[in-house]
Length: 155
Image (cartoon, rainbow, N blue to C red):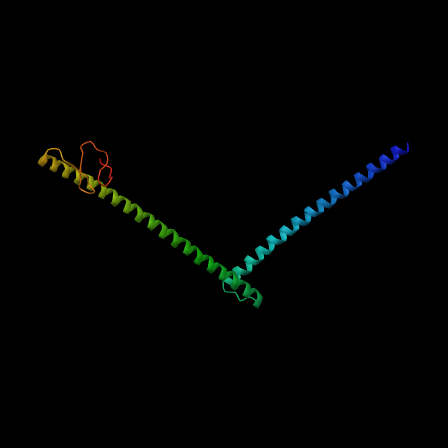
């Protein structure tokens, strides 16, 4: 019977401690909630006074100094955003220039192939079946895929 009394006593102690821990946890949660509310209210208060400062209301010395620091931070943010926009604009311009350069190179390559074709046709009409490399001008065997002199791929 003593053992049952001991077990009952232990169970009551554990139950009591668990109840205490639960109550402490609830109170800690309420404290955290109140602290969060206080931080939100402080932020609202700060925004209220900064709004007054921005509207030209004269505040006491400490409040004015804090507002000046906020204003300086806003100015820095604005300058940094302008710098970001400048960097992005320069990057877009460089991309556009690269695209234009690539297009110009493609046009030059196309024109050189057309000129080469005209040149080969003119040479064939003069000599019969002469093929010349477009890069070095060396004669190449008909049906060759590469120039034997400079290695240029033939069309």
